[in-house]
Image 1 (cartoon, rainbow, N blue to C red):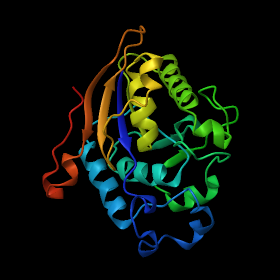
Image 2: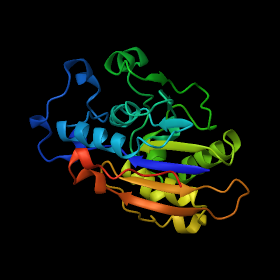
Image 3: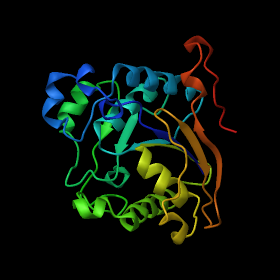
Length: 237
């Protein structure tokens, strides 16, 4: 199974002067933790969508944060077949607790060109719907969330599936990527660090038989620094 991993594009949290990066008034009440993308972030999401346009994803999953969903929208607009976005609460960033996302009706009005599937309760991964602040900052809990995602993928999808996951940097680099690679818990718990810049693309080839999986692409941001008309296309090989 090929699992592509994208860190969300630049959000208002990622800049030093967030007030100079306006957001839509209807999301103002959710901006305390659930940050919108900047204008540059929307451009990054669009470029990432072009980068991945030749890949026909079987499913696209992301966390319930606005920055995840807005990034997914930039990618899905270039997909020919997969227009559904499935929200998985276990893909939350660390430190975002007791939060299940903006109202689904608001998200659907903001992004009408994709079908947003809310995360049900209980969650499909077997995780919680909301978490305490202590849990969300706990490295062991982060690792367990990532392990649940890995088990969910292997149980749900066949070997030949191609999946896209959009999440946050700290969670992906410290937990999700090493968990998908099936690195030992003691390695993950020591804050394993992989590069995950805004709009970066990675890929883990996940073995369904439980063997160690391979990370074949990591932190690819080449599409963010070239002429948009000459985006290097990733081929699913």
